[in-house]
Amino acid sequence: MCCQSLTGIFLKVIYMKNLKSSLKISLVAALSVIAGSASAVDFTPLTGAFTAPDIVTAVLAISATLATIYVAIKGVRIVLAMLRGG
Image (cartoon, rainbow, N blue to C red):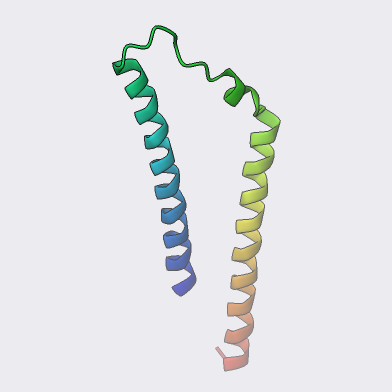
């Protein structure tokens, strides 16, 4: 129960950090449009830095890490239950 709540808190913190950074980027883009800049914002260097395989690799690495942690916690719980005689 404790680990599930810690995982939830951890994911919530990551989500909030990503949300804050996304809001900052959106705010900068909106302010540049409101300011009436003649040229559009060019995100080509930013979007060109990442490719689909890079993103897929990152997502799979994160999921494998979380799965490993989950399996380790589950294994410890099973061993402790056996030791307690449950």
